Image 1: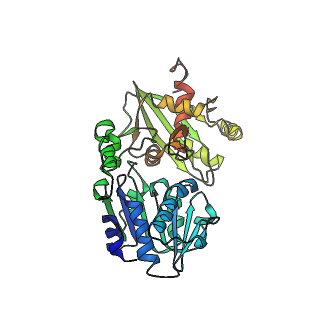
Image 2: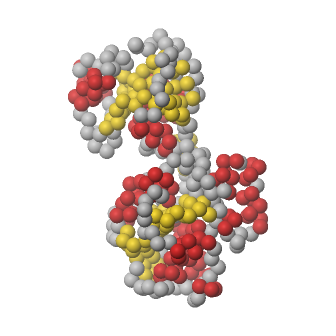
Image 3: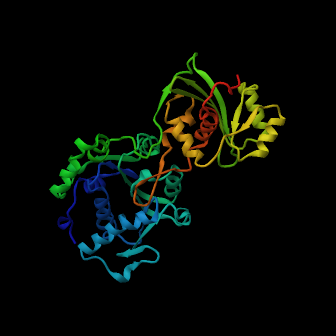
Amino acid sequence: MTRSRIQTNIVYRHLRNSTGKIAIHEGGTRSGKTWNVLLFLIFDYCLNDKGRTITICRKTFPSVRATVMRDFITILKDYNLYREENHNKSNSEYKLNGNLIEFISVDQPQKIRGRKRDVLFINEANELDYEDWQQLVFRTQEKIIIDYNPSDEYHWIYDKVIPRDDADFYRTTYLDNPFLEQSIVEEIERLKETDEQYWQIYGLGQRGVSKATIFKYYEANKIPEDAEFVSFGADAGYTNDPSTLVSVYKKDYNLYIQEHLYRTMMTTKDLSDHFKQVGVGRNTIFFDSAEPRLIDELRRMGHNIQPSLKGRDSVNAGIDLLKRFKIHITKDSENAIQEFRNYKWLEDRSGKLTNKPVDKNNHIIDAVRYATYSLLSRPNFGKYAVH
């Protein structure tokens, strides 16, 4: 099979010209990113060499099977390279010209922390956490290729991968794919009129705000002097999850958030000492009501700790309450900003948004919910606040 017989676009040429360890392919829908990466792996790696291990990965295995694995097998069949005996369906592996291609997902921890590989391709890389990325990178010896639609305004890829001196960055759109049917081109261009945000992300391949992102927020230099103090809120963690403390202020329909603590390995005494250092005094701290022992211990140390108001669907009710306000976060509250950037609704296997938030990036957000929902959900807020 000669390359002249392969239908490729500019993505393929980008990969052939890439000299960095990491090749980053950002762009809109139907630009041919994934298809051309697979062509490159098959024809430039597998058919030109032997003994390689190539890992192809996505966030969940159903998405691997339904997208990139299906495309891989389709390409092999289109070019008469598929052999049933080389396809280990139970292990999701394929042997091609003495090379092993394995399909894995990050919800298979034994796979991402398993054997080493020569080449790694992460499809829809923005679905992964930074920890997932690090575990995969640690075990990749030669080349890493990632692709994604830029549906997040903020992401670790932008901050930690694109600036690397061994990374090559490319952006493509549907206009770079000469093989698209005209009906598909028209459907994409229809987004100009029907959904400006989707047009920016999936048409122009430019970064936008994901529809899964729960909160919009603004950075503030300081808390306004005439803002009304609402309460402190705190969440407990220890080894992996941080303990957090925030203060929340209200001015009309604006909420102002100041981060005071975001740290792991905090004992009860450590928390008490930090509360005193911050100057909490006798102000109320609303705490996770699932921590009655910790609440009791902190009360005995002289703190005005109250269990957070909880009930059926209290997480969603707390989110709904916060979304009634314009949220401001002080610029020095770096962890709070990161959490509000990355707190998202859970997507089901088909990519449809649910009404359930993803249970991460929420340690400060939980503390903010405790501080606000426990008071602002009451009709007579103001009578209960302690100053």
